[in-house]
Image (tube, rainbow over all chains, first blue to last red; front, side, top):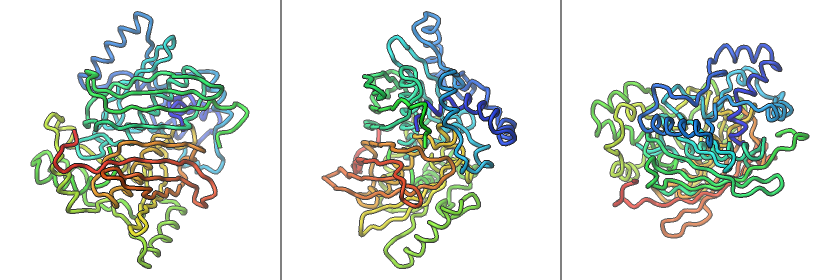
Length: 230
Length: 230
């Protein structure tokens, strides 16, 4: 699934509040993450992530970039999602526990990240700190965790340019392993849009941008408001 | 990073016990997951996962298949990993909290899975139940969580055939979204081995195998015992 969909979790969760009654209220009561903006510094952010955050917040003041809160809402996509949500076969008790994958860890243990977009240039930058629970090889970040953040970043890039989208293809070249607990800079941009297809590329580099960790391309499909997801 | 490396986490963690002294002991004390075999049924497994598990355990008795415990050890890979582990720059306090990404959630909330291998046919099958913390779009499994399990399954397939490997490429076509909290069948096989390159393919289907959710190819590189990971 496109992480664009996932990244709008808070918004849809609120939609569930309306739709799902007690189940959603249990969920609401059991998680204080629903209305929280996760894309702001917390005590687990290391020096690199804070410096990058401050640097881009200054760019935001200059007007070319915009920080993307995790609970960023879009009326259009909200409506689109609502038309797709809820498979009646899903076990309600478990669904009431649902959390967006990239925000399902306690602060600092999993995915710590903030995204900034430059809509004029059709670019999204993500600063990602890989927590200790994302380990693959000893001391290094799991390839699946890297794939997850690439999907999230390119998905947001496609969403900014094309509205509600779903991941159709994700192609990642892993050049070098990413040390666990380090921060990486993920830069994505729209390569082209053909009808409902949105082509996005992304590279993952070290904070000093001298080390290229991964390169990826993603293909997203704009969702048809008249069709359900599955 | 190859999830093959990741999947051997327990083994390497024990290696750290030897190497890292107090840090490793803290880690050991803080996690009872170190020696636990996660690839066995727990109360969170649904009926589908239990049925598939029982079905393949019977195949294991017949001799053609083998269940792969999460703490599966391999003397050769153990030594290879030890020669690569620990970047001195890593923050020890955080590294002491490190957990294998695919086993970092409480039972039932994240990745619940068991893998079986058929070495004669160079195949690995993974039965995966996507917990509620792996959500992407409301009611569906995050594309990054699917990519993670594809990396894990194809990585194990490559490991069984080629020893210690690292993911070089992961190319995933997402055909249909996977309902959250459902179980999928992931089948991987070695396509070819060229020198240090191991080519693996994988498909993800519904339990009745009638729905094709995803198709993927992975390229893994056998690690050179004389070189470090980074």
